Amino acid sequence: MPGKVLLDTNVIVYAYDGSDLKKQKKAVEVLDRLAGLDAGALSTQVLAEFFRAVTRKIASPLNESQAREQVESFVRAWAVLEVNSLVVLESCRGVVEHKFSYWDSQIWATARLFQIPVILSEDFQSGKTIEGVKFLNPFLNEFDLASLIAVKGGRKLKPI
Image (cartoon, rainbow, N blue to C red; front, side, top):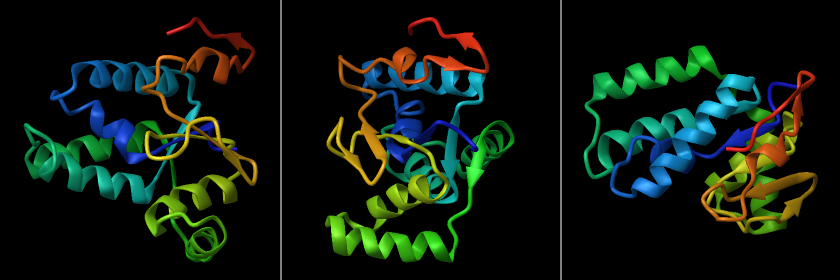
């Protein structure tokens, strides 16, 4: 399994967006912890959306070269899951059966097909599980990453 947690675009974008310092701090903590434990994954969709968001949608955007460097860093440090034809088909099913928007459905389908049990995102109902994939909002006060991935590789995690 490539990771225990799939990150949605908003989580990694907040790490680069200084307009909400509380969310930025939390995003950086989550990214650092998951990267250090090799417990997280990103999809090609998330990396593409990240590039677009940090160059166009945040208060102090990165230039294209800076954003490209960040994407390269993610590719080197994280498990990256390819969006393939099966993910697209499953995404379509998610739209029809679960009434997701297409892009949200593609995040869910990626996690489901790559057997990743948790998606971190602020775009879904936190705590809800759909077909074995649980959605958690890492920006809520009750979010506890340490209990989410309590043991990884035989090591106990310290709370964030």
